[in-house]
Image 1 (tube, rainbow, N blue to C red):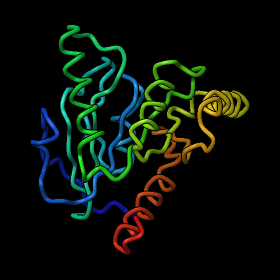
Image 2 (spheres, rainbow, N blue to C red):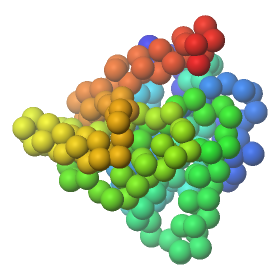
Image 3 (tube, rainbow, N blue to C red):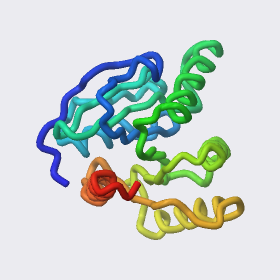
Image 4 (cartoon, one colour):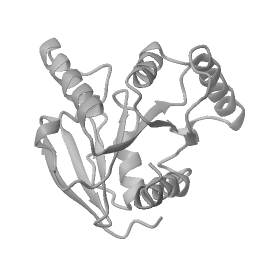
Length: 203
């Protein structure tokens, strides 16, 4: 897939207020400061489509971006650390959970994992919750350029091993670097495969 057109559509505080066009949605989520905005900008060839910030927790709404007039890329608020009140964190958690569990247009959720770290409980717990809700998802290990190939493979295998304690079959896995463009085409082609399957009634 080649992204020829990408435009911001709207920010919504609740899944019921999201666009009602019925187009398929591919959402991106991860711990705060995982590199989500940088990834979105890389995928869409737009340096400032999603706001990049060094301050965790800047995404506080459900953000829809129209891609090629065919599908939505959805930027969800991160989970985990954010400099905000507990009541606001609970509000964001509820917003995200409602979107994931109730949004019929959600076709696939990409969960971003910072590959520099050992498996984090908050990531593993979130992924396990997706299994409980039967949400289709894939993993994207971000910031691959920050590690040597040896450490990169070690951390990914460690995460896969941790997931295997609960999962008989692991989800699709992608490795990404917004700095080098690694993983860009693989992720877009995977979305294109889903779009094709939707068109042909295979999903």
